[in-house]
Length: 267
Ligand SMILES: NC(=O)c1ccc[n+]([C@@H]2O[C@H](COP(=O)([O-])OP(=O)(O)OC[C@H]3O[C@@H](n4cnc5c(N)ncnc54)[C@H](OP(=O)(O)O)[C@@H]3O)[C@@H](O)[C@H]2O)c1
Image 1 (cartoon, rainbow, N blue to C red):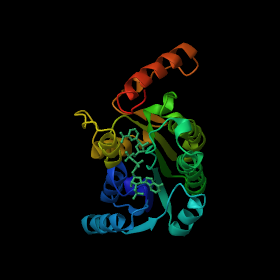
Image 2 (image 1 turned 120 degrees about the horizontal axis):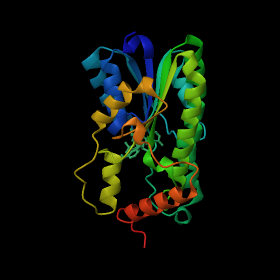
Image 3 (image 1 turned 180 degrees about the vertical axis):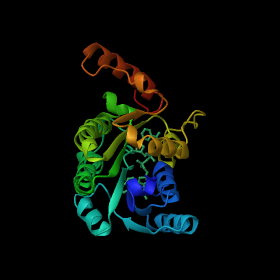
């Protein structure tokens, strides 16, 4: 089976306008799969859609939807319509709040949960069901290393990413026997505009060792059949941190905290 046979004729990329989402869209289209591009910025999506169509000769439609809105899923369902979706990439998900939990209004956290949990889950229910019926397809959830443990400045973010991890693992177990691939692609620091904006807000320089969005997309798509988890930069057997060990979870949170204090003005 070619990539398009397995994951076409349409892919839906949520959070497609820049960074890793943009890289996913371009690489998916290069394999001959049509794309539905979702993000909030219409002009940016229009430019990307034209570029993708010109470069690859595939169809590309855009949908300007706020994935954090309570009715986001209904808008996605309407935008996709009767198109046959063989690949769903959930990319949008970064935390732009960058505060301690009690320092932001609870509505900000509700938005993050809506975008990272509820909208993702509803999309997987719709597209996963269609894929299972057809006996083929793929779901790729872009995650974060924060999914392995909570930390200050990331309480809600890491909580949503932990949900996505466990959810994706469960989906993988349920859908793999039906020919549907599910992958949690767990990223570390990646050179996206959103991450650069975070660094700029804190007055920090751009580190030299960031992953590139193109590499991330390439690895993610190439490992789609090898779910349920790929940790960026690690071999399979290095996915550490025993989930049931309280001591190792405490040590990890302290290590993450020591690192994030350099990024967020905490104390
Ligand atoms: N960059 C890193 O260092 C890093 C590290 C670990 C994990 N990750 C994960 O990698 C993924 C991509 O991260 P990123 O750094 O590129 O930032 P991001 O903000 O998660 O993704 C940017 C894309 O998502 C769209 N987007 C964001 N919020 C949206 C919303 N409410 N509704 C619709 N579209 C939305 C943006 O377009 P619009 O602004 O046009 O809406 C843009 O296309 C995320 O899941 C993140 O958790 C990133």
